[in-house]
Amino acid sequence: MTKKKVLITRRWPEAVEARLKELYDVTLNETDTPMTAEAMRAALADYDAVCPTVSDKVDASVLAVSGQRAKILASYGVGYSHIDTEAAKKAGLVVTNTPEVLSECTADLALTLMLMAARRAGEGEREVRAGNWTGWRPTHMIGTKVSGGVFGVLGFGRIGREAAKRAHHGFGMKVIYFDPFPVKPELAAETNAEKRDTIEEVLREADVVSLHMPGGKDNYHLISTERLKLMKPTAILVNTARGEVVDGKALAAALKAGTIAGAGLDVFEGEPKIEPTLFECENAVLLPHLGSATKATRDAMGYRVIDNLEAFFRGDAPRDRVA
Ligand code: DGY
Image 1 (cartoon, rainbow, N blue to C red):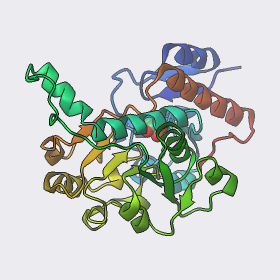
Image 2: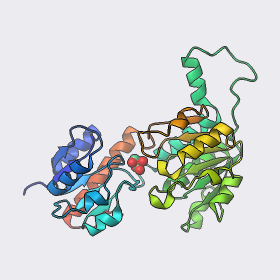
Image 3: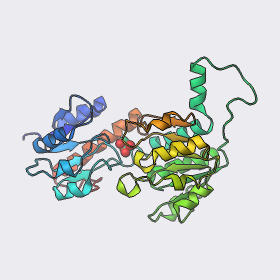
């Protein structure tokens, strides 16, 4: 039987790529850079499956083309705002993602960012490396104590709840959350989490606000100038979700004015470009989208893509179908 033709848009971890190659006729986008619209159109015309990542835009202009061979977009990652799912449906393409396997590592990184921002770890490291540290003194690089504070979660899905567990059980923090969808009481009970009816209530009350909602147009610039004004001047904002959820310019202005104390950001609107004014903020921790970047997790994400492809080509429903 001829093998299905599968295109992966970026290099995958070695073992998973090898497994994929055993199963399919695999082509790698050799440049290992984000696919252009033109390359993506050609891929959809030539392959049975295309496996994009967060850095490949699969929008309506790419999908609204006739004569596509591809029937599935099996994305490597949980977030899928880089894919226009409505346009994919119209084009007859199934879309899958890789949930669950990255929740713990992404939550770990949210807490890393919380601590780095609260304890000024990035600033401290920069000072030491630059040879500017003059020694211990009682007033040096004073940060914020997070233990025992209030951890506000916007988006209480799998990753948000994992972050809440770490904050609650590890740092004794009270957890409050807002989610537009109902949350099962037993899941909220894991961290004694208290629901708030609006985003605004969470912003006003929390010492740390951690973002865990999907990206895309519905949540575009959800954290705006007006909403940043509601946060405490001692509060920290953490974003491991999607860059477009935060208005970067507004955040930089709030950080500079000191209307919030700090921010820990792993994702950026239009990444890898970064809103230039954020670089001017010593109190911003900026990481290069490392949420799921551990060996175990990146392997697991790849195997999850393979499971989805296998199910689809067998004629079964892939477990992670999102469109
Ligand atoms: C995810 O899985 O959504 C990560 O952010 C990488 O895409």
